[in-house]
Each structure stands twice: as C-alpha cells, then as structure tokens.
Amino acid sequence: MTVDRFDVAGRVAIVTGGGRGIGAAVARGLADAGALVVVAARSADACDSVVASIRSNGGAAVAVVTDVGNADSRDSLVTRTVSEFGGIDVLVNNAGVLRPHFTTKVTEDEFDEIFRTNVKGPVFLSSAALPHLSAGGGSIINISALGAFQPMPGIGAYCSAKAAMVNWTQTMAKEWAASNVRVNMLVPGPVATDMILPRDPAEREEFVASMAAETLMGRISEPDDLVGTVLFLASDASAFMTGRSVFLDGGMLR
Image: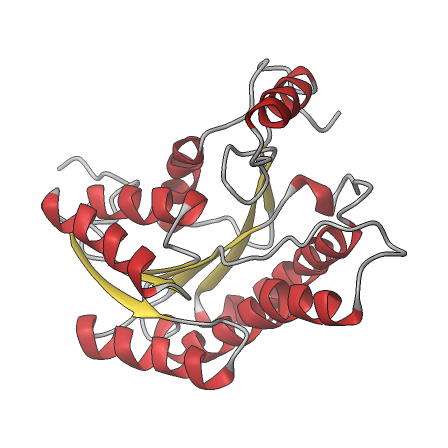
C-alpha cells in the first residue's frame, strides 16, 4: 500500500490571523487538502468569509473570533476547537501586527501591541493547545518574517518580535519533543498582502518592484506560495523535523 506522507486529511488545524492574507491562503490550502480548519481572527466578517469559501469548495471549517493577545480569547479558541472537532493536530501561529515606525517614533503602546500579538499570543496559545496536541502528537508552525534574520529600518519592533519567536520556536521544540509535538518556523520574504503593501497605487508599484529586485526569483511571493510548505510542516513528511526555520524568501537572504 502506498503511503502519502503529505496527507493531512482529517487533521484538525487552527490558523490564527486566518481572515486575510497568508492566514486565509493557508486555511484554504489546509482545507483543500482535507484538514478540518478553524479560522481564527479578530474580524468576524473576515473569518466568516474565509469559512464560506472553504465550505463552498467542499471543505470543513468553522470561524472563531479570536484576539491571540487575550488569555480568555485564546482559551475560548482552544475549547471551541476541541468541542467542534474533538482535538487539535496542527496550530499555525500566523496572527501578527506590523505598525511601521522608526525607533525614535514607535510608541510604547505600539511596542506593547506588537509583542502582545506577535510573541505573547503564539507562545501562550501554543501552551494552551499543548495538552490536546500531545494527546496524539502534533505540529506547531510559527509564521515568522525575514526581518527576524535581516533587520529592516522602520520596522524594528516587528523584526525584534519575530526574532524572539525564533528563540521561542527552538525552546518549545526542545521542551515538547518528548510529547511528540514538533515546533517549526516558516520564514517568508516579502508577501503581497495588505499588511505590507502601500495603499497608494504608485507607491505600491514602486515597493513591489523594489522588493522583487532583491529576490533571486525576481518577484515577491503571493500568499498561496506558502501553502505547500505549511502542508509539509503539518504532515508526516516532516516527522523528523523540529526546532527549525524554513526559508521561503525567493533567495532574498544571502
């Protein structure tokens, strides 16, 4: 019998920040591959829209409005997931905020918000999900950014938060390997999402051209470009991989 090690059919996956951009693409990709998906984000409308698109394509998904920086909200997400689908197999920590400012301009409130969402959220959500993941083994996938390894002016708080998650990814991997829970990090380069693209069309065109020129592939990535790597990290194809960062940056870091 042929075994498909990339098979995620029937696995329960939580995707935070699942209402748009990378999270929405990952949620749809997991559902297309047969996973049971919980789409978590702060916007109810965004969650519902992604869930509707998954269901219209024959997939299984539920929407759970979630603020990963809030303890009660994290606990509710875990409880609802287990209630709906009986457990958790995959957690994709994708929710994030950027708030671009140079160091002397960033406010303490913005700094706290960035670390609350980008570090505190995934660390404590992972801990809350751990008892259910360890019941049958599981995979935690932290979505990082190239700025964690290549700091960029104007987004220092964001880059430092993502760098902190590199350390946390390795720490959780070491602590939870005995529970058969793997923890890895996906590091994309520039991705065409509303979070990073300028609103002004002319500025957007200039930004995309500039970022594309920095990659060996000659373009920036689309959210769908990340789906295959997430499926790899969520599946048994990566069963001997933990504590690692996988770069999907088009050759930008060199």
